[in-house]
View 1 (tube, rainbow, N blue to C red):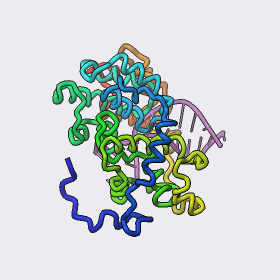
View 2 (tube, rainbow, N blue to C red):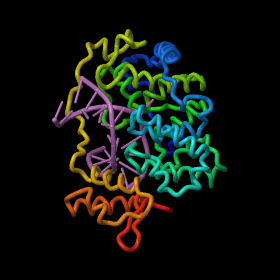
View 3 (spheres, rainbow, N blue to C red):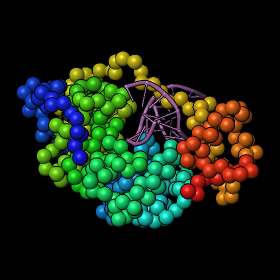
View 4 (cartoon, chains in turn purple, yellow, blue):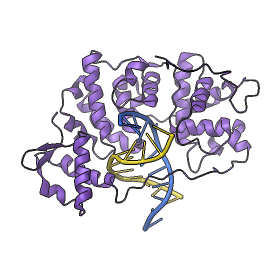
Length: 315
DNA sequence: CATGCGTGGTG
DNA sequence: TCACCAAGCAT
């Protein structure tokens, strides 16, 4: 459940900026943000009651690094085809990869399939409610475990995604962007800001995330629409620009990732084993091409067959 | 803890 | 145009 070997911190509120006497527990943020959420929350299918925990979990996998608009149609197909974890667990993993389409990072499809198998075997086919059990599933990390427990089951967890981190960085810390990697100080802050009441905490988690997604965006932030603009430390400081080294951008053109994407696209479209010669056409450079294909096989995304044939994995 | 991992939209 | 970005995870 809780992290085992954490040295006792001094005062949990000691390191909170703008919290001279530790009275910052978020009361001045909760009400306006939740009220804003009640008014402006998007009507997303995984937020409807009928989505259930499985719907929430599928959406969270798909939303890991992929925008909502591209997730929506795939999510609908996925839930219609595999309405319960056991339905997906029965399929070959390659079918999950195929149905993933062009969402990107297809290892997520493999992990979601693996999670469905584990849920079927270990949890009687029901998405576990326990945070630690969620965390133990493939493809579920700190964020997703908290998100499923909070959104699907209404539990009280600090849900710290990139949107929330940005909202906290601005509203509380007073800087434009959060650190590259999530820090202990951010986790501490998120826990300190979590409302005591379980139901309100779950609402707060969704609301603060939505605020970061719709208003407190990375670029072109909409302070004029922000319910906590009056209390925002960053805005009050005159919205200073991010200092320090620019965060490393993700190059793509010419990388193995691009080659892997092209190879997998061929295999997704094929419904019979594909000869090597067909895969060779996607990339001119043989060394990189071979490395990319080997990587896909090593990741379990591609299954090699005798005779130089390849397909999406049957097992 | 820095890297690798897809894809398409956008200013 | 092209760099940057979008609800992370595993290693």
